[in-house]
Length: 210
Image (cartoon, rainbow, N blue to C red; front, top):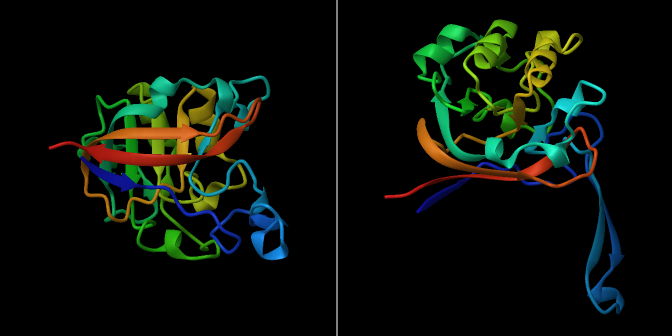
């Protein structure tokens, strides 16, 4: 079995939207304590994470109640590294996304903006029409390789998030797909069970078997 870990490492200097993670040493062996203990201050959307419907709609499904069936199972990685700007419906069609429940978009973000420590001025995101396409084709999980699936010029209206999450489609963001070839894999994506939360950081892997 081959395992691709598509999870970003979490640390204080990482790429992050807003406040970066903070780490406090509570106990340490070097200080004479019985063990090493740290306390981390993290946002729910730190690193590789899943957006739940509750992220953009009060009363919608929180992260601890989303279906694990949407997060675990066959997934298609679509190579869209040639796309500049927005991912459009024809990109999804040409990439063979129709008929897949879980779709991960590998874009130029993986080798570029995702590797930086500060947010880029622009990145590849999903267009509202592409979001509608995913809903029409009954995709349950859509992933992308950056801080947000929203295009950089739509982070004031958040149209894609409203459409996808409003339809119950889960969003996986900050998936590191740089070393993952296009194709079908088994996805295991397990967000931490934060009760009532709008989303959660997750450990996500793709596996293949010979």
